[in-house]
Length: 71
Image (cartoon, rainbow, N blue to C red; front, side, top):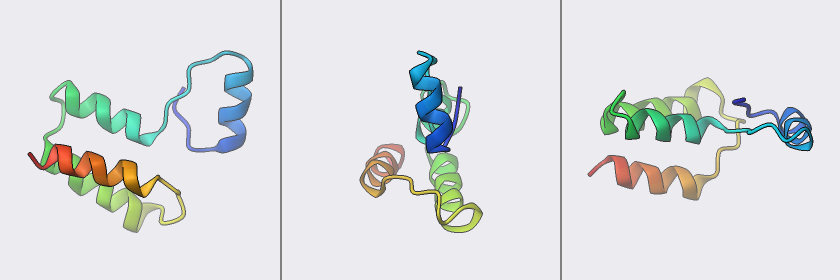
């Protein structure tokens, strides 16, 4: 299950269902070569700053990925 909804995430975890968020999806696509680093950076930036400003993705984790993907 992929979710950014905290209530849904807590429920899934209580039922022992694996739960992943947006950053995990980006990681999987980047690591598999489905998307390039630059594409991942652009889309993460768009997600954070245009699509859902209130999403609440952790800034440190986002910045760490951007540094990795920029290499």
